[in-house]
Amino acid sequence: QRPWVGGASLASMTTIRVSFCLNAGAKAGQPLATVVARDSATEALLQAASNKLRLKKKDAAAARLFVWSKDGRGGTELPRGGSAAALLRNDDLLAVSVGEAYSGPRPAQPAAAAADAAAPATRREPPPLISGSDDAGRSYASL
Image (cartoon, rainbow, N blue to C red; front, side, top):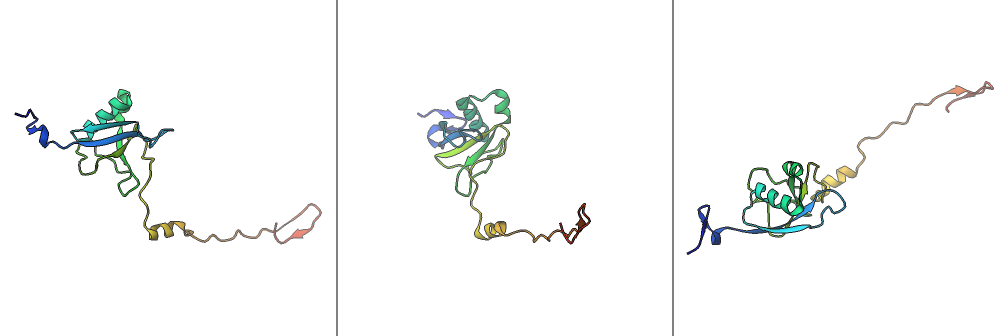
């Protein structure tokens, strides 16, 4: 007979393996700890991250989790107080932020958006001509 946990058997619970990294600093993006989590709730993942990375209570309270990825999910923040099951895959790297914005790789922009970003925004007008004279009394059309 299998033990029951929270109304579901251990065999029916899904597990996910994720790694944690820091979001900022010299070790940003480098996996520092890996866990196999039975619960994909963001709060459970934050608790595991704070234990593995030895975050202070103040930092753990303000911590945020982001998916660190080069595919289209990079920079996605896991919802606090909700389930992250739909956003996570096995072997994902989660960036732990203690308040700062996501600093990892961003999803690639479409070609049209990249071309618009590279084009100059507006054409600048040349400055007006300035005329004047020097101490000897010679006049100049522009300086």
